[in-house]
Length: 349
Image 1 (cartoon, rainbow, N blue to C red):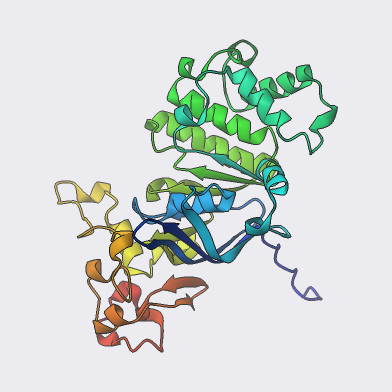
Image 2 (tube, rainbow, N blue to C red):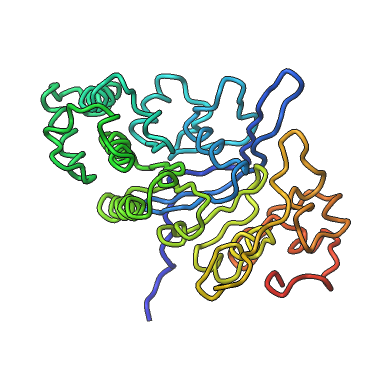
């Protein structure tokens, strides 16, 4: 029998609390993210999933403070270690983006500059962040570092290909170059925003294996943003499900896939084709994600939910804890007034 208290849990590397993002238009302001909260711990891969228009890319842009000119984080906080990202001055923010957080964008062809060689872009990325330990490196050293990282991410003949331009690489190779650019500064957290969505299944598998290797060998934490639950099941430790700019469910990947709580999560999982469904009609989710300019009152999933009651149209659900997870649904809130005689078995709290 061991003595002493259990070890303290690892403190989060990233903590997002109550984040709200608003897009300002000439007519009015539209809430794109509302009350989004989650943690990412060192070496953890956290998936962020949902349909197009649910706020996934807005979230990634907010985390990096790369929102468009009409976007604004109006409340909440984003703490990376001890710093609140939303309060950093431009110089500190620039250093944070290289040292602490790196990002792989969805389309590497538009993220890489087509008029500069890969060598120029990888060297310039390092020079832009000399505030770390890179000031002691010569240009030749920076090129050697770039070649080494290109080799690590699987670019063949990197010493020769580093002088090529982005259009001379395939989509999968360009995505690897973007990963190499992020890794050159050894960030503690990597945000992959739909990083495999435009790739064929072979290249997708290679990129996923690379991300898992980064976590395994470097201890890199990863936020993996995707609409593909099958891919998320392969690589993630925990999952945050987004709908209409809100986190509607969060939990470890095994529990969430085995027993989804929120009706939206249930519908997403039911829509994944399986071999058992041969000859059957595929499941779909009726309706569509509501527009930011026409969000329903109460629960934002109410018009698509098979279990909706009057209370769902009147009351905005709270984010409540259920069996070690969190879910934003009146079904699970004992104070919501939901009538539980119609609760689905799969969502029985």
